[in-house]
Image 1 (cartoon, rainbow, N blue to C red):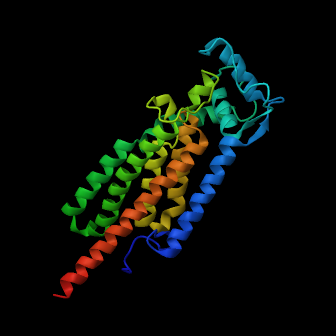
Image 2: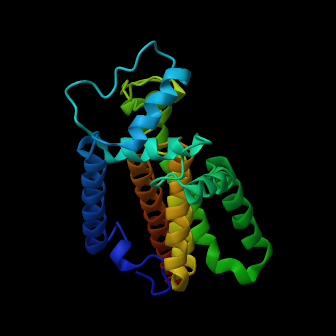
Image 3: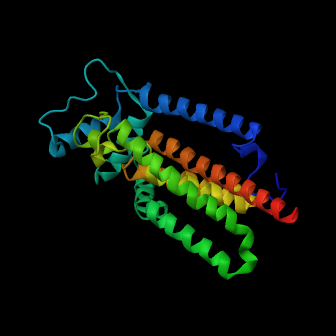
Length: 276
């Protein structure tokens, strides 16, 4: 592999070590997903977030009565608890306790604006324009292949994310907040059941991986940016926390996959030319 490759061997899915690391990362992500979405760990006893949601539902719920979480459940999952904590920031009174204080409300306001930075079409447009600039400014030529890889990765990951959304049919947090039923409807085309994975988180994974390849020294900063952009989808109650984990991994993987493929292709082309 070319020494100038921007893809670290440890993350190259076409290399054994890289594929092993991605497999491990996928396994960890699936474990986190199951833990967050399926394991009840937050007791309903003295649960302020749940209590305030029930009061909210009496006035705003779309069903006549709340049937969730049911008589057989005594605890909430991490996903459910976090969404109910975020919902508390909608209240204007008695919301100074716990996680739903003024800091969380301020973060939610900021999230409502910054979440648009990871819009899929916006990310694609920025990548395409930046890729075009590399042909106009020769000194940026080294960015050309990673940008092409990011473009191909964004498109591939976006298509797969859309298919997974339809296939899984996971209800968005609004299904819980307003309808008291966080259900799953596989093969659903309804937007309210297209929660998993998060498309914004997928685009965020594309951005973070591209920036980390181009400017590896700043990788911790890009990771912080990625965590924040994924968190905005939870703060705005558009996605469950576990949706963003799967989406982020999906976007990041396809970027390094396509970049690695394109680099190998360029290396073969250069070898073919030099051998003539």
